[in-house]
Image (cartoon, rainbow, N blue to C red; front, side, top):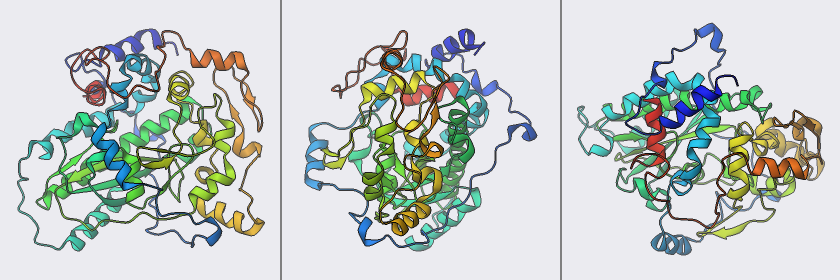
Length: 431
């Protein structure tokens, strides 16, 4: 875009929390021009039973002992702190996705410090004298009033909090909020339109999750809405709260919208009734489909699951995925070609049952075709950018090769210009 040479470096410099925080001064477009529809509210339960042929395990395969051993040996770290050398370049490429959502996001983030949160202070309101069940129901009803697509509840698990935030959260319950991203825009991925829809969804969700945290504090409990950039593994909590299952594309697949849902977490000291992992049949659907594996432009998604830190799952090849996300309008091909995302799980399961195991849309232009933004060509089923194009997208200008074996952060401040974790530094851009 024409303003990239000016705004790109400005967004990069704004990673320093002490720098000029300019995005909050961007005015919002008038409502008639925003053309943003509110996200739908999902039903509490799916309208079908998982066929026996699709059942595997509720949630995901996990070995609790190995999980504990992995955490004791090495806690998880913020991804963008581990690979922060490329964060400035990532922001330079994404400012025009962030910009339309920046005013709303900035206002929501500005409300976070007013919550008791990590400061340990008690909320001003006295604690409601209600049961855990009634409080859980109140929060669920309020989430629907606020326009959150779905909400679930899970126990806090320190194994899935990034080490940089280990002392920030109440270790009671986690409220998991999901907000559906615009369907039409997502079908254009990889595109700037699709990425703008993603950031708009994050902004809308952040506004609503902060409001929900304020509601919890009015009940007399501490509540801390997490940064939209992540302080813990949101997908883990989405699975544990029964909102979906992990897809082969490494994303939470929800029954209503597949991976076309943005997640936000709220940690609280409130005693709540926790939901349970559910077997929606998604593991079996993914195994029969594998569209994301076949259609990934750079082969970043392995074909088979393996155990990683006690969880059996696909481990995305970061060294191939990350540069493509940065340079190709956020990519998201793996989201676009997922039938659960496009048609919803009910339609996919119904088609599977009626046809004896066929996946709805598999191999079709409608589902699997996409326009590659870097060459403007449309690639249908069985087609991908050629080897030269793939080499180019894996090595964008000024890119530093990602070491997939690195698990510890690079030196603090090396890329961000400060000591704050990159997630906090990105928040500072908006504040």
